[in-house]
Image (cartoon, rainbow, N blue to C red; front, side):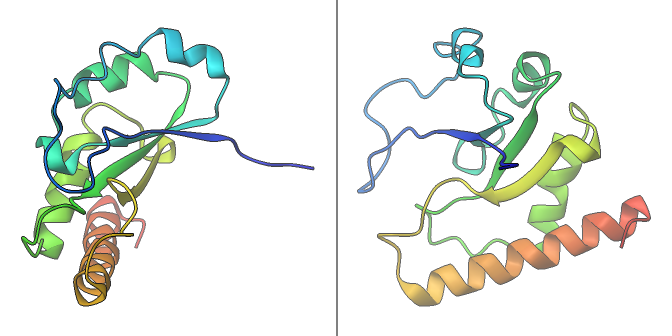
Length: 134
């Protein structure tokens, strides 16, 4: 079987903000021993904090970049998402990057989920067009 192994690090707390310092520095480089092909990390809710460090930690791995904040009712725009993608691409090669929400939408209202997923797709399309890959 040919499968990709992705490892998600979630800061948790579905009812609000975290109760501890939300940093990946406590996990890396040790978590790289997991031998995952891709690390799925939250960035939208943290204003892309540590994206530069993630670029160093994950030089030879893929990044599942959380670019939609699932805990916020702020309705991101496609331009917001495209801007976040541009910021990620300052530290990663395009072929290394997958975009996704920060975490699951399990506790979010369905109307919000639909809007955010559509916006994520539209933002990715904008970024691809800028890269000439649209």
